[in-house]
Image (tube, rainbow, N blue to C red):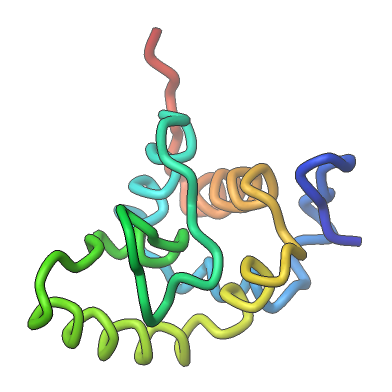
Length: 128
């Protein structure tokens, strides 16, 4: 039922009933667009299991990217990051589990966020 990076993408109708999709619907339009831009740009790879100890470079999951959080670069920011991560992990548990366990792919996320934005009457236009 879930899409994998090397498999046929999940159908939107199948996504809509999934708990991770419901979690994505909690994101604001700006957050969804931020996530879409990162996916569309193609230069950033979302991290998995990067919630508590983001060691070495920019390691953020799609929710942290959507929310606009950056990886910490000081000990003080690390503590703040961990507190924020704990809160977001509770609020977006279904999405995070699906992402961390490989049940959804970047393509699944992209399809879902486009569907959500479309349902909110927001159109994404590609610039060349």
